[in-house]
Figure 1 (cartoon, rainbow, N blue to C red):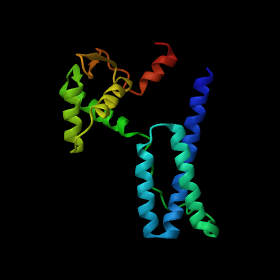
Figure 2: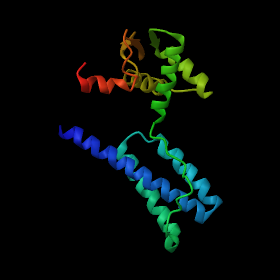
Figure 3: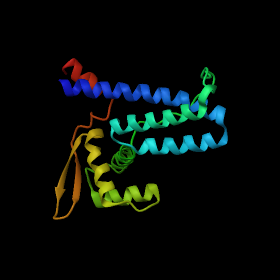
Figure 4: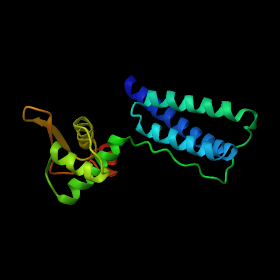
Length: 181
């Protein structure tokens, strides 16, 4: 129970940090100009690649401290009419797993091997991917779709097998559990 509470606390802290970061970035870009826009884009791309939430919080705090140091006394009120760019909370592995999910659903395949997943992801991203990157995204797939991953062969060939019922990817899944049906 305590670990679940800690996970909830970290999730809330991440949401608050992202909201504060977005407001500070809009002020920073408005006050500092073009160089700040380029810096904020670079920071945003780095933050999207971080998967560990504690590392994410530490990194976002470092960026916040640097922005406040550069802004100095010019921090007053954050403009409310301007929408800051939103930082996506999905990691690169989550985005790749979503791409594999759409491939599995459109092709109506019941199984997906890591070699096939590598071809799909490389065609989407237009670049070579390491075997480990494909395995990480393939192992995220059971969290999205109702299925299991198992290891086949001698090397690191992993296969995703989709189960018959696919209710895990709907938003009603949590409601079904709460209602007890």
